[in-house]
Image 1 (cartoon, helix red, strand yellow):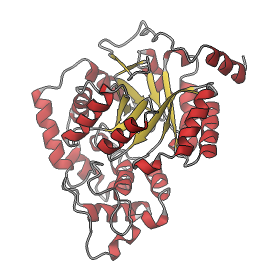
Image 2 (cartoon, helix red, strand yellow; image 1 turned 120 degrees about the horizontal axis):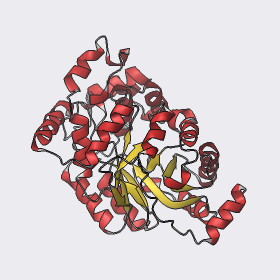
Image 3 (tube, rainbow, N blue to C red; image 1 turned 180 degrees about the vertical axis):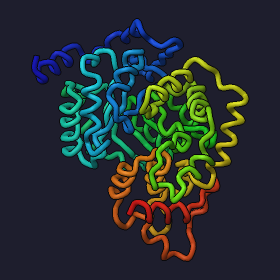
Image 4 (tube, rainbow, N blue to C red; image 1 turned 180 degrees about the horizontal axis):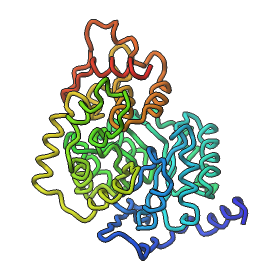
Length: 383
């Protein structure tokens, strides 16, 4: 059947929702499914964030044991991530919920991204198509909303999504006000203020599907590479921030909020996959809460909470939150290429290369981040 005819059949069914696929016979014990807002889909509370994935076998294993939500994007790994994800999930399309994203700023470019995503993933449609990294209300334009409407009418997507890395309470409220999105993908982790969790709960109560990202608060505890990103002694940063059990505790903390339908986690090995599966069946224990409190203190000067208190931009126009997020990709995830690509995608005048010329930094982080030092680090490492 051709792509066009299969999409027509999809439309003829009125975008009918299939019954959620039964977990495979080899499904992991304790696997949990949660409703994804009002979409009618049920997704595993542990989703697979494919951004860092490099081994298709890990994705295949995740699908085989019952994880059914896989998230990628057009920009990941220079556009190659979608191709790898499509190859890994070939033959399993009927049992998974698949999402991708576009960073385009206009309708035509967004629709071109979508067609490329479908081709690379080897599928006729996406379950969720996200407008990616829309951190201010003005970033969600009528042109982009029209792109999603047209894509859905053409049967290329089932549900419309939007993602934001910071300003979560404001952006969730704006998303609900627009009334045209089915799913929001938002940063949410144990370092954030209670108002983020409250905003998520309010949005979910109104039927918006909520997926959490950045759950590991920068990923610092999983640094295991011996490269020179971290200075002359990479083990110094690792030793200070890597605490056994911290990442499992972080995932448990996020999933404890029942308003979170799924949390997408980057998993690059069977060991990480097995560890994360435990979060769906184990409660967050008091000793783990203590461990997270210790990590909050350790991360305070380093990790941007993406709270939006600074507006994301300093008085000189440097995009503070975005620059520090790029630094997290390098230092926390060990993904220098991703960090540099994201950094160089920022407008030249919005990068922190000129922060050294300032006598003072206009941003005083309420969470204790050493903003000037971190911006200088981002500029020297990624420029």
